Every structure is written in C-alpha cells, then in structure tokens.
Image (cartoon, rainbow, N blue to C red; front, side, top):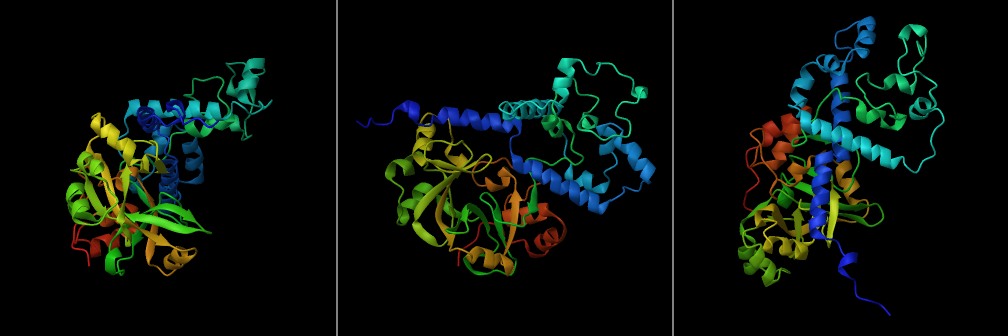
Length: 379
C-alpha cells in the first residue's frame, strides 16, 4: 500500500530559510573562494614581485597576514573592501567545522598534526633553534602562529590562511572559460535583437541535452497582476493576488506564456538551487510564506518565458563571441529579486554593472556602450 507523502517527507519552508541564512553566515559560497583566487592571480600578474628582491619576498612570507596584505599594491585597493571582524570569525570557525565534518569518516593520517599532538611526539613548546623542520617545507609549516587549535589537521589549513586579496561578497564578477549552472551570459555589445545588452542566468546545462536560461535584466512595465492578466499566462489567480506587486522580467523568447520565479528565500519544495543563495521555482510554497508575512512580494522576480539552446549551440555561439561567460555574486543575480543595492552599483544597468566589475577590457566595453539601461521597449 502506498501512503501519501507526509509532512515529514516534504521540505519545510521555514527550515529551508534557516538553512539558507546559515549558509550566508558561514560563508559557504564556494564561488567567492574561486573569485578570490582569480583576483589574487590577477594581482600577481600585475605585480609579480611587488617590487621586492628575492630575499625580501622570502622575508615577507614569514611576516604576518597583515604585513602581506599591505604589499599587494594598487589592485588590492580596488578589490578589497572593509572586512567585518565578527563576520570573519563566524566564517573562519564555520569553515573549520565544515572541514572537520567532511573528514570525520576518513581514516586518521598517522602523520597528521593532531595525532602527533595526542601522542606527545612534539612538545607544545619547542625552540626553533632545535633544528626541527628548518629548511624542510611540511604541511605543519603552513599553520599560522596565531592558530590556537592544537588539533588542526592538514585539510583545515586553507581555511586558516588569510587571503591576500579580499573580495566584496556583494559585488564581484570575473570571466569564466566554461559554462556551468549559475553562471551568466553577458551579451556582446554588437548583439542586437531581443538579447541586446542582456544578462542571461544559466539554469541548466548539459552537453547531451542542451542548455536553458532566463534573462534577468529586462524588467517589464507593470506588476505581476497587470502583466499576467493582460497576456496569456500559466499564473493562476491565487498567485496573481498573493504576488500582485511582484516585478516581472522578460525571460526569453521560448514559451512566453509560462512563468518561472527567481528568488533568494531558500530551497523550498518545488524549487531548484541554481547557485549559492539563488533559487528558481517553488511558487506555491513561496505564496504560503507571503501569506504568513515571512516573505515580501518584492523579494521575488517572476520570469516570463526563457531561452533555450540545443546541444552544442550555446558553445558555438560563445566561440563566435556572441556571449561573454562570467560568474558573479548572488546579489547581481538577484538584482530585481530584492537584493540590496549599494552606492557603488549601477542599479539601472546590470549589463554594464557586471562588465565594469569584471574589469580590464570588459570595463572599457561597459564605459563605451552603456547608457540605455535595463528598462527599455522590447523590439
């Protein structure tokens, strides 16, 4: 006998929201870590030696993280943002716990630092002049002197090291050499038609099945109640009334009568996680949260239609320069779905804003071709 699904087997919307908030607090967006690596590589290309001799560079490696951060030069002044100490501590310990849990099922390495400490092989206080590990690069050598945890393992070392270049979690973007769910396609400045200066969020990508995406920077005039009532749509009356003031964007030329929903509320029942903190779908559960006043209609973006590519079509378009492929912050992706906007943002031109944030030749393109903005008459 098949029993109907109970509430225990279904996603709890409140729990989904809590999980999303915890992920934000603990800094579990792996894309930010990748963005830091990209920014650091760019800084090293711009200042390979930072103007120092080999002896000075070796000396700098032994200095504190603060001294290292002061030698990054002009690029760091652009990429770095004020770092909140409390948030940094939360992220540090949250990532440490995550690393501990991820290694909980692994066999303990007999050479690990924690095991050596337990066996008492190395005294807690040892003089460097005893000669131990002098001239021999070991994983233990990378453990910062400020680390107070005597049981730290090799796997946890990366989360203890302070990055040389800090990335603003609200505002970052960099080019990608490949397509992945959660990345964006930024229209080449020469591309015309309905995709002129659009930003397309990739929802699904499979070399065998093709790709789907939604335009996220073409807000339409009017709210959901007005637009969905005046044109053919799959939005029922209850959704129209619950989200009557929600914004609507042109999502693409495919299936214009079908609407999807983009939000950052959480991975509720019926939704799909596209990127950390970014979700598509789950409108029925979101409607319940709106009625409970846990969610405001302005924090949801309804998407009218979508874009689609058959296998290899998108790769061919990218190879011909039709699209710039990039990864960017969740706040960029949710610009019209309730994400915060800062003074540094160009809140009326997402296309230009992301290109500017990518820097170098992309920033030049944005400066030369921006001005039309996101809100425009569709051709």
